[in-house]
Length: 531
Image 1 (cartoon, helix red, strand yellow):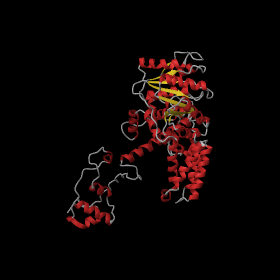
Image 2: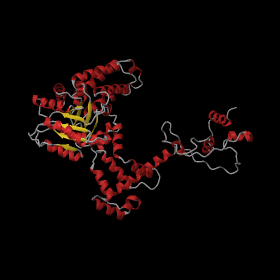
Image 3: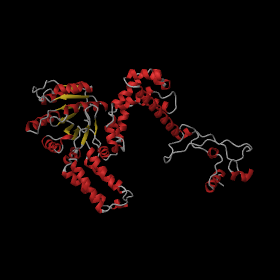
Image 4: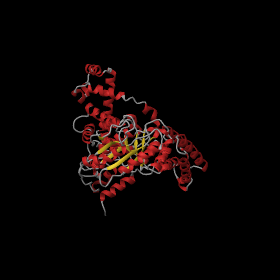
């Protein structure tokens, strides 16, 4: 939804790179481009004016002229202002002190309230609650039946005493649902109310009557993010006629310009609490303004990615696979690879997952062209192998590969490609694991280099004689280095006993390498101890 805005902002920031300072003319030009980008994204005009005014006020301050990288400074200001527009901080759902907590959904017809009720039910179950969905939309054809189907798919119970289709009193249904929830020990009640094709007095009065009957803890206004500025007008009408506590944005995965999402919280003064970004019942989560701003600026959403991974991956299974991969017990096989691949797929489409990673904004076209069916082919190839072949792909000869290709409906070339890529990936990960086990990643600040192998001692060198020419010249009067326990690279991770390498180990690892005089003098003083 925010692709166009993201592209425009990226172009603006790219033009700022390489400048050591920004003049007032540069800031005016940048503000003008950002204003056009926001207006093209259908952001409310009043919100755009306030955004640009704050941007220029901060950019013209003293800090921007002292910044080493003005481009990064402008990005930070834009990020802060986007977070402010989107509501500042995430607003958690309130729960009643005495259950049940009542959540009322309101909005126009077609905004996705019924489907969202099921999504909210799954989310509440994941938070440890026992939700009940209430079918109080008795006017739209088959609305009750739709909620029952959604509730069955979500694994959430539905209270539907009336058949709907114009029959029954929605206010009475909402009122009796509270008594039903109390008797059956449901701690959250989600009331799905009727919508209309437009705002009218009957809709407002019915919603107000339901609110008075159930006294909800939260009233959530469900708005379709694809209807543009009309979403803001509709939200204002609902705020005046019924009142609500928070906003739920639906269809964020659409191809609209997304201005409603950037306008509604600022104009109405109510926080965006949840967002739905897909058709699946699990494509729903709490709304975090800082994470959304980061995604708009192409900086990814690592925290959401981590949260989804924690929900999806089995910690014990992943730990065992990592142990195999890094050289522990057994060997990482195609069964382990398949399990991890399936876990990644449970997180959602690969394009969505990759889009949450920082720096992927420049690769949107490649990400959007990812063929999810390729993973199905890989899965079919692996499942066509015997357990022994999956455990040890090295035994795959020509005849076995031909049989696997026929069994999976692919070609031998596809099988060869999978096996070769698997071996390459496993080798790379094992090398990476070896480097990390050796004391850290080479080239990273703060990482420890793995000690070099000890050079073989030349014949004729006496026992206890130093390999350093300077120390050899000092003769036997030089104090011998005290023997220390051997250092294990795993000590760097708290797995060993000694904790740090001794000077003897360092000298032993250096072999015949001669240090610079100043550094050698420092080591000599350290070895002699305090005088």
